[in-house]
Each structure stands twice: as C-alpha cells, then as structure tokens.
Image (cartoon, rainbow over all chains, first blue to last red; front, side, top):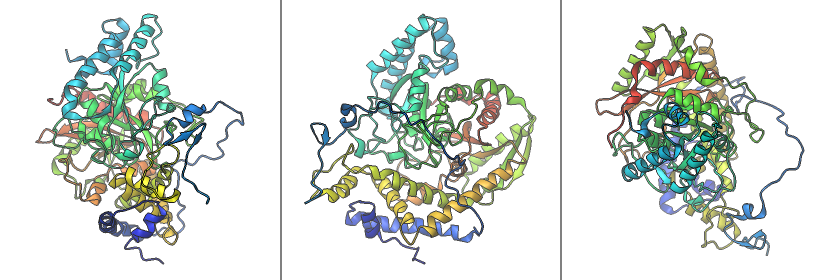
Length: 96
Length: 487
C-alpha cells in the first residue's frame, strides 16, 4: 500500500499538466501534506460491505431521442478560439 | 416606505402589475444603487446598464400588453459568473477564461429569461467555485456589506453581497459544498441549495459534478420560493436532472404552522462553534419548540468525516472537470510554450489561481494509481454512510435545524495561508451536498459586532416545500429582512 502521508508533487503536477514554480512546489507540499494527514480520519471507519456512492440519487438509462439538431454555427464554435485560420483552430504542431 | 431596491420581488411584482412602478424605473434604481455602493462592496465583475434597461423595457411592454410572464417579470436578478448567458462573459472569476464569451444559455438562464426576469451583471465568486470567502477570485475581493473589512463568504460571495446591499433584488448562485448557504448566512440573506437534480446543471460550469447545484438568493423566503419555481425543471440536456412533479412552492408556505418534527444533530453543536452563533441557533430552536413543533435530538455519527470525504471527492471530480482548460479550444493560451504538451503545462499554470492548482493536485493525487482505493473509493463508501445517517434521522423528523456556519464572517485575509482552516469552516454545509439533500439558510440574528448569523434547515429529498415552510414560519416572527447594512 502506497505511502499516504505525502504527495510526490512533481509526479502529480505532471499528471495534471501543471507547471509549478519551485515556491509553489514547496508550499503545496507542506499545505497538502497537512490536508492529507487530516484525510487519514477516513481510515478509522469500517466500510466492509458498504456500497460506494458516486451519485446521491442514482438514476439509470437516461435516454434521448436519436434526432439530429442544430449545433453551434462555425462562428459560435470558434468565437473563443485562441487562434484560428479559416474554419479551424490553429494549434501547435503535434506530429513531427 | 423602503427604497425600491430593498423591496421584495413579491412586493415589486404587485407594483409592476398595477402600473405603480415600471421595470425601467426599478432597474434604474438598482443600477443607481449599484453605482453608488459598488466601490465599497465590489460584488460585480461587470455589469451592462444598457442591456439591463433594454430587458426592462421588454418586460414593461409585456406587462402593458397584459402578458406578464409571472412574478419575476421585470425583476433584476444578479448572475454568478459561473452560469452561462449567451453573449456574456463566463470567467468563473479565473484568468484562464478571461476572454471567454458564452455562445449559449444555461437552462436556468433560459428559465429566467422565459419568466421575464432582467438578468443583471456578472457576480464575483471564488475561482471555479473553489473557496468559502470569495478571496480566491482572480479579479477582486468582494466585501461583506455589513462590515467591509470582512468576507462575504463563498463561493457565491458576489451573489449574497449584491442582494444584501440592494444591488440586485434576487441573485442566482451555485452550491457544491455550501457556496450558497454559507454566504447567505454571512450576509444576512436567504439562500437555498435544492435537492441534487432539481435544477438543471446544463450551462453551470462544472466543479464537482456529483455535488454541484444552482440555487436562489433573496432577502425573504417567499422570494426564494417564487425564484425556485421559475428555475426548477427537468432538462433533457442534463442527464442527472430529475423528472419529478414540481409543487407550488409559494402555496407551500401556508404549511408553516404544521406541527413539524425538527431534529437537532448533536454533532453540529460541539467545539469550534462560536458561542454567539450557538446562542442564536439555540434561541431559534426554542422558538420552534414553543410554537407548535417537536424538537428531537438526533445523531449523525459520521459528521466528522464529511470534510475529508468532501475534499477527496470534490477535488477528484474537479481535477477531471478542469482538464478541459488546456489552452487549445477556448481558454487562455500561453505564448511561452515550446511544444504542444508544454502548451498545456504553461497555459494552465498561467491561467489558474493558487487554490485551483492546489485542488487539482489533490484531486489528481487521490485518483492516481496506487492511491485510488485508499482515498477515492473509500471516500465514496463513507459518503454512503453519511447519507444513511441523514436518512435514518428522517425516519423520526421532517427536517434538521443546524447552524449554517461555525462563525460569523471573518476578516479578509485571515485564512489566506491556511487552506485547511478554510476547509474546516464548511463543516455544517458539506454533508448536505454529499447526501444530495435540500438545505436553506435563513437569517436568525446578529452577533455583538452586528454580523449576521444564519440558521440552516436541512430537508428530505425533494422536500424543498417543507424547508421553505419551516423557514417562512421563522422569518415571519423575526423579520430580520427589514434590517439592512449601513452603506
């Protein structure tokens, strides 16, 4: 079972695609370490045979009609694009 | 005769229909009030006077033709900057969405427009709804109108402050861990979080999808009732939206004098509860006891686990929901990136504030390989136990009475270096989100510094009518809504 008392900030920030400054790494490490220690409380509870709850009032099989409808126009969809050319969003090169 | 901007929506609706006041006059009064007090309160991130007056004129035309669309026709309603309104900013008080202009309306916004409301301004909040003080806004700090050096609460601090200050007749907010009820309590107004699924989340920028709900702010319970009526609806665009019969909430207030069985959970009255708050809540309980209600001691034994459970589940869901802000399609894009992956790292680092980063890190961690079972799965199981505690108590009582917040509003800056202390202030509200129950905060007094104290009433699933009636019973005898901050 993994060590649950500290966070490998560098590893997690990488997963989250967040660039952190050295100061932030230090500060978050301390702050989140305290939060994690507080989280240890949940280990005091016996949860044998308890179902996990992801949703307060589970409802199932919510279907919608398979009917084509108007979506955004190109202008609406690209309104907030950081960079665009013609009807496309310009992005950095992905494939060399 | 109180100022126009401090009248209730119900009163104003009557004046509008009788032609004694026009929506243009009312909206102008709200605009003037906003201009006058905003330098102190700073509840709004932006507002558009011309647009508001155009909507008001449209309402006046409807009324003149005898086609009023209901009690909200012509009433200015402030909008938290997390709810999409077509053509308006939708920054969620973050820099990462600084330039974002919404191409669509949230269902709640559509419901408000169809009801003839005047959508007024974009209200300040904690960034992405993460916070309990509105200090995490990337743009400005909102002040509590009762004491400008104190926080208004959060994350819907702008919504609560604007209603308390008369800068809006009503305001809409969102509540994931208390973000409507707590600021309502701290600003001396009424705020309600509905049962999960009652109000569509389509167009509500997602923070924690299994906890988020939109809800109303007003100065009276009756106003909250008519506001809730207008925005509660099943929505095919939100697959978590519930199909249920929506009762007439305003008529339900007539049930106020039913012999309610009200539970008082012992765990909500232990250490950490400020003494003056405790006294005010105990007085409120006494009021119900001597006015036809039965007070029942109940226990919610897993209460002290609510904070870890909430902060595991909410941050986990948030880390997933905020992955979409990647600098590609519509958010801030860094110009310092060296390649496409670096673009994600830098755009997000530049765009997100500190608390958001903290919660994303925490959420990513609890979901990561090796830790998922220990944290996230376990938290979901404890969540079941927390809900069971409530449902067991509801076998004996109709609703629960608790404080909304352990303290009154604290000074701005007090918790800024202590995120855990800030998290602990959510203790009375978060379980309600975890269990998906409805909760309302209603003003129940002031402390010796004249800071508002709120009483929280927690109800059974889909029993908003009950908690509104109970809150109305209390408000009717105390009338705290007639007091206003000195601005």
